[in-house]
Image 1 (cartoon, rainbow, N blue to C red):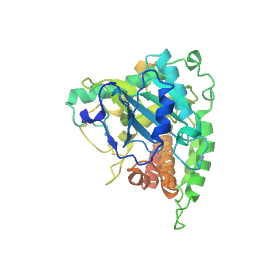
Image 2 (spheres, rainbow, N blue to C red):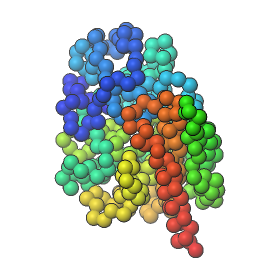
Image 3 (cartoon, rainbow, N blue to C red):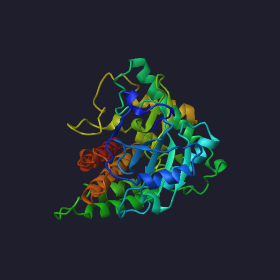
Image 4 (cartoon, rainbow, N blue to C red):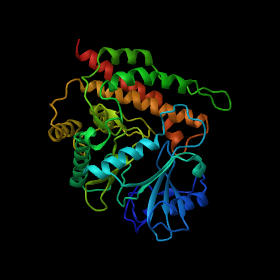
Length: 375
């Protein structure tokens, strides 16, 4: 999460902070492992768990030198999807980007795939001292800084999408074409598995509403193919901003990254602008808000196109936005499935999980509006 190696997260009001360790780890084994592999690491180790992170348990480590680290690991137990929680992939992309590009990411120190240490694979990375904003309006900041933070987020995304992934050793990190086609085939299968997951009382998670109709529309209206490194969950609360300046210094949470369609990241980042406000929803909706104190979605799309050399306006961008709602609904449904299986690591998991049906229906509203506009 954040790096000054001399400071912890308690001096930062915009850092989501830590809580008690919800998923225990073997600190003694971890100490022995890190002492032998990270130069300068010194025991004893203080361990906290970050409050953020819906799937991969994430820990704040402070060694005897008061140097800070972050540890990310796979959750315990049997996983519904073997490709999920891929901390090994996170390590690989962070290592390549931090060593070979100016994309703002934390440095990584070590990947451990030996289950004897902590039960599941994990990696250790740099702690970035900075600010993490949990809402897209950047409310604590002056208006001009809010706008600059958004511009920096967009520019960081354009910078990522401009990287030649083959030149930094990521040519095998994903398939070079057909990203959306594969997602259209795979996500419904994942959703069906999640829907059938039962809790201890025999209650099923349940299906996404209008799933078959939505998938058919995606098949009939797929966006033109394109390829770059994609983050997979690029959004404001996965960014670390400089402690005092309105600029991104780190992009976090790479478990869903791959080689894929760059517009999937852009649509994910701008999703809030297309969400209607629902009481108690963990995804704030800006769709019907007037006089925003941040740039509009259209303005941000223009900046992205300018920085990435892409055509503006983006043809068929409605597809990317609608697909983001569907994909988000599948992710939230997955959190609900982990709750049913007692695998959720976040104390906010239940709050997120109950909205998966609402989010999918909002995606269908975009589809309906697109269909009507073409009549």
